[in-house]
Image 1 (cartoon, helix red, strand yellow):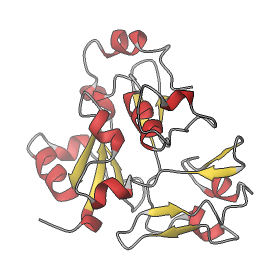
Image 2 (cartoon, rainbow, N blue to C red):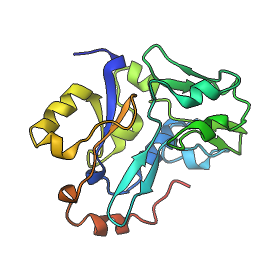
Image 3 (cartoon, rainbow, N blue to C red):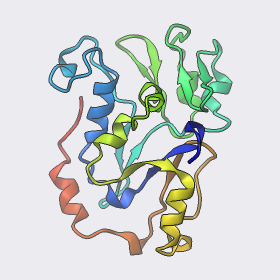
Length: 205
């Protein structure tokens, strides 16, 4: 087995139901009480660092920080509030953040956002405290369908190669910590449209 630095999150859009359990879990993990029963009552309300985005009438994809190897947000941050952990995760020091929004403008995935309630940027931290304890990131743990998975890239690629990986995966979007399975017409799951409609009104806030 490899080290923490070799762990990645694998996203499979063909399994995403847009239930947004990942959003709720993320917001709860970054709340004060860390309870789904009370987190939404806190002031300011905790913000999810992951967002389920509908791609078309069929697919949705959980959009999150890619923890890029050469992170634009880290490069442009004028106060060095965004930095890299020893494991390779791109983290944010809220104390240093001045809420200028440069990171949001620089990110090709539109990930860091400014929380107007606190005047600071918020971004995915890969649940670094959980990971250091040997736990999964909260979004992965909450996903009921396996659209979000956590492990070693080589294991995911080995699994995909067994089902014609060359036809399903064209490669990662950018070097980093998050990998997305490429969707083709052949990978369209049955009844996914109906399931997405069931959860269309669900939202953290």
